[in-house]
Image: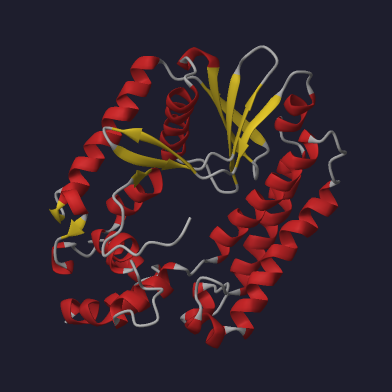
Length: 314
């Protein structure tokens, strides 16, 4: 499909979009509006900068990405009936991804400035804040634990059972709610020989309440996309660091609540649009900075907010 330029981004909704909207409206504006078309050669400075900063990663998100990429390759092996790699090989695969991103961040700053969507860059290197020995030790510890947790996951036992079918793995898909595209990227969806559907979400961090909200949305996604009754869908949160999992069932009533919350979130977001039909945002100044200013130095978009933060502090 040929690229078609649009003046404004397409309207859509996702769990991650809602999370950013709730954390900081200015961050939301830079992520979903100001960065649009920032990849163009003659993009306005703010759009180009917002697009560049949007691409930054940090060590925690990089570890999560590495774990998910490794899990995806393991799912492919399991689906083909091949033997899974030992924990040492899984750990090394995760570590290779981290090394690549670290090396790129240290050596390729100029290339990142020119082509930010093609060059890995950690915000710790971009902003020059450095990486403490304590953080490196914490990431290394989590890496080892995540590799062990992944190898010991319940998923591999399930996938070996006769009749189990992998439906999707790390696939970017959408459903429509009230005419709005809703994006979802479930880590893994499979159907067992008895017709039960399982949605797996691997977590390389701690347990938080919003994880349940996220998998509830994935269950709604499966119900709508594949026309599966809620009673036949199980959500499994796998906390790799702790080597444990939590299985959840959601009723039709609960899924209706999930849908209602998503629709209410969409309406709140649309209040910041001057033209909802074309997804044209109101002026940047109407997207307030977060009150939790202690978080700002750790945000990707700090460069764009720094001067305003200094003025407001003074």
